[in-house]
Image (tube, rainbow, N blue to C red; front, side, top):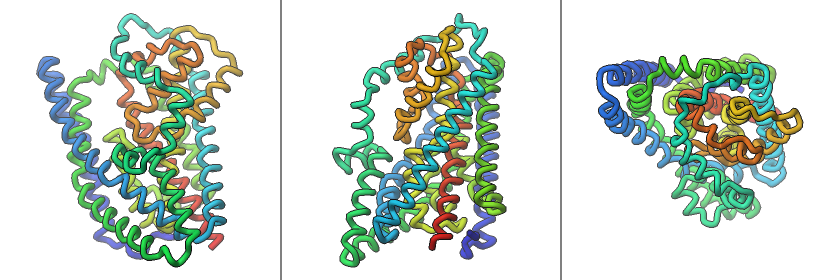
Length: 422
């Protein structure tokens, strides 16, 4: 697997320049937000945060505008180009095997570190804002197997596209692509039209990404304006540092596995996905980089049909950073409230999270909703979510970037396997 020959020096310069602009925007956003927080009262800071975050909202909405048609067109074309059901089954089987293995490893890493470091022991509950958890605990009331199935299976592809339900769009696209592949040459005009449409949408990505530094600036400035970061970090040092140990361990595992399968190509892959990683980190949204990541993985040298098939599935089934966080946060809350969970119960919790976490892409604060629901299942006080709400944004920055790395490595590895079979 080699870098695409179409990649030239000007393109690399533009990519590096975008990454630099985003990093500079993060720094300036943090500085501006901190100045507002230190020099104005809470009401003014909150108003400033509300308005400056509109920059991030505009950027994320521009990306969301692209995602549904991009997933639909690329996935249908990708499946149709695979040619036969045997190829679809082979690649799909490898993808799902990778995704579930990666999810299991991520959950286990969170489980091991939260038990070893015990970040919940000795936490003071006196300053916890229980009211902040009301919205999330309300959402968990509808969290059931029935609701889970309804969330996965679309009743209308138009409704799924209108609400950016990625997993529902994936389900429809798989059926549509399989049907198209089974018809044969007669469907080529339709597939060609969808292929051209996907390229137009990818061209739109270049326009939207120019707004990324401004969006990141708004997101960071808005958070720093209303949060006393130094106080948060002091109060939550044990939780946050333990979480970072878990995330770092997960990165090490993913990079080692990536090197085993990709060798020196891993370095090229990492160079390619620097911008998506930084954008995901700054905006706390792995969804925000979906179009850009699609483009960069194709430039890395993965066939477009593989990227079109793998990445939408990965965004529904392979959120490694979120998975690690869910076990970590659930057991952390249990530790705070002194709820004793034996090994068997924790393993059962792990399996529950394995199933209930699928298809959460695009759902706001989905990780916290799943954590709250899981706590309710195992008689852990759901209001414990209020403990991690103040620092969740900073955790989300790391888990969003981790989700992007996990999907990039998975797509690259499956792409390499398919190149060998070609």
